[in-house]
Image 1 (cartoon, rainbow, N blue to C red):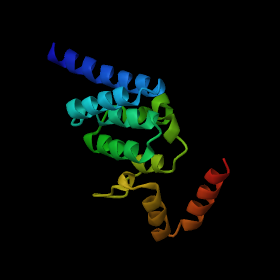
Image 2: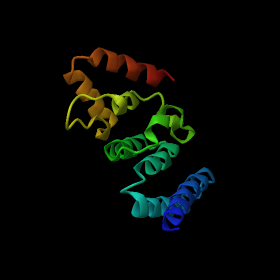
Image 3: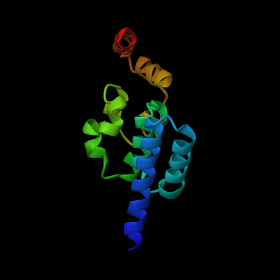
Image 4: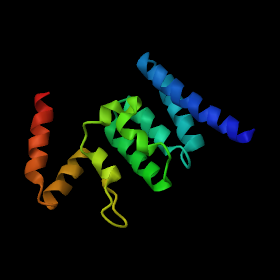
Length: 138
């Protein structure tokens, strides 16, 4: 019974946060997202990432996706097709979620600027510049 209530709570907060955001009712959306974070941050990082992804807040979404990866969230395999995270599908950081470069790697927690700095450090900066230019044209 308690598990059902927990499930109902996170689903309700996620839906309300996205719906209110879509209606441009930002304070109500923020309140629902804050409640989602307060009640499910230990087990619902993927759902929190969905809310940020829907808002097109990519840096926060990737922070929560990294947390979901560390929590071994069951939702991660659906990331590439998740409609709430559609704003992230073309971001190169998505591939970092599934890459395993060894213990302690935390590529998703970086901002886009830091991500490009990391690419430069790994000698793939030309690819990063080409990607940035392509995004600027669209």
